Image (cartoon, rainbow, N blue to C red; front, side, top):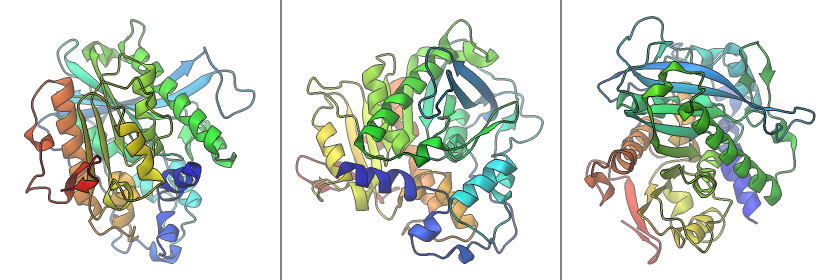
Length: 393
């Protein structure tokens, strides 16, 4: 039964603008009446943000979803503080990626390249700034079939507060991954049967991708000149949907990762009875992840919660939908598509950025965060859950 919830929770509900169909809005509603390019919210930190992309190749293993491909290729976007906020703002995604994402959602009535015009806040190729080994690293994993760019608002915000952020395109799991030579890999994994074995294989593969990227950014033979700024002892992983579900297997597989966040992702690989003592945050929809509300998705969090033996929190957001937690909701709303949420996507984005940053500040920088201790009058939509009693306040 779990795989059915995974399929619904990790794919259809998050496909950019597939939401128009999933939530009952016809594709014709996607008219983008204002004609203005969509934009991401401004970062809240004091530092300007730079960005670049890396093409990484792991020769030790084949591609998991493409027959005959003997190496694992990944595209990774990096965001980081810069003291040189000059030049052009980074492109959100390519016109081809925009077109394929819209086609995947069955959306007509929009210019095919509209998502490529999204206004970002980071400067392409800007020089990284910071003290050697002075910046924590956060590795982000997106939802199934989603490109890494759908986590850009969160990544830009963290970088503005002094983090290096690496978002991974898990090749053949995204509708489009563009390589420097112009090749575009599409979602081979989307065409496979999505049973329990598939999801188990997928999250374990993502955990391996995450460890590999961590190695590439902290080892002695890195491609990125800003890697000298990364503190290899302060690394966390976070993700949305199946990317969030991959956080626990990442922690279980790699003891060097110090903390993890699952944002609205039904977990797949159980925490063993021996437990996991590193800090972990569950952050999801009230409608889906209220403890004691039944089986399916919430039952996976309840199962794993019992074996999390370190610092932990279970937070739910009232009025949010699955897409609300990423750029998907932000862009859909700006393009005139109703995602079915009771809370504006901009507000949910603010909540995700604020609580994610608080968690990282506390567990990577050892700065106590009262926001994580009890409900906040500033964020009344965020409820603190006690699974033992089945209550959220």
